[in-house]
Image (cartoon, rainbow, N blue to C red; front, side, top):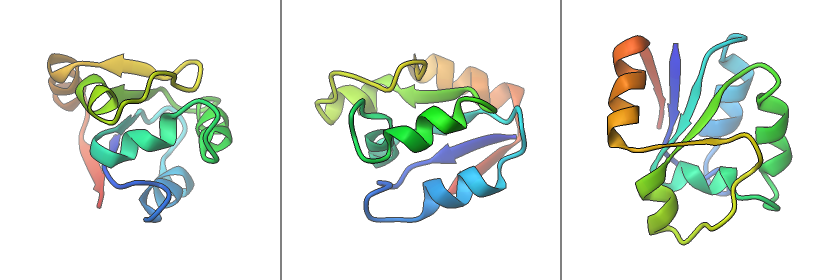
Amino acid sequence: MLHIVNKSPFWELGLDSCLRTALKGDPILLIEDGVLGAMAGGSVASKIKDAQKDHEVYALQGDVKARGIDRLVDGVKLVDYAGFVDLVEKHRTMSWL
């Protein structure tokens, strides 16, 4: 299952809930303000780093750029909108709102 997180991990608990619930091997896609969790050096970076032991973590490139993020946690993969569609086509989805 593809887990999609769109809320800031600094204001909402969606990312924490996702990380507790996602099964090993489930990919996680950060979109909208959810990409803030992938900032290198941010207070959530260690959670993302730990999550990468069991999950591929993706961030939507347009949302990263729109928020002025210039460095992501190592290993977070940027995807464009076509990549987003590819992930959705390959997996059932769960949105963490």
